Image 1 (tube, rainbow, N blue to C red):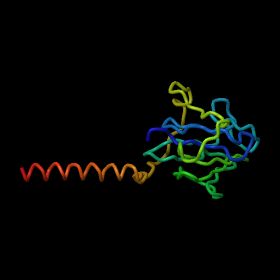
Image 2 (image 1 turned 60 degrees about the vertical axis):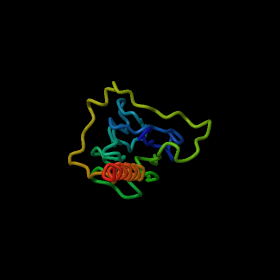
Image 3 (image 1 turned 90 degrees about the vertical axis):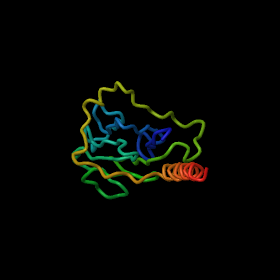
Image 4 (image 1 turned 45 degrees about the vertical axis):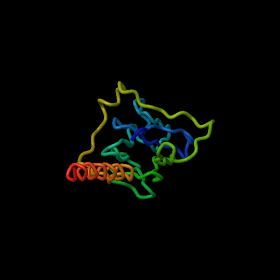
Length: 161
């Protein structure tokens, strides 16, 4: 994956903002250490965590009182999100997007990138149970097919010569 997926805010005070999702992840909440800070009273200090795992985007409720909703259903454990999937924290609706998936307007806000030295990295909670493996991407499968065909052609030429 050349560029990481992004979260775009569809509703709420941060509407239009984009955030890059990394393996280090990001915490959404009211707390000062959160990458995505929401000032709503119904949002916990550390409400949710979004992160990459096995090439997939995952969201996890961090024990919030009011929950995290994926496609209008409250989640109780980490949940994998596909591109185009929406989830809600408080009054904010987020969608997962892949870079280049839709045309970006010139006036679009910049994508927020998490610095590797971010203090959040050391303090982030981890998934309490192993997450299931994400299915291989179509690009990955095609790459394997091409490599297989090249290897078969090389083997055939070696055996015939």
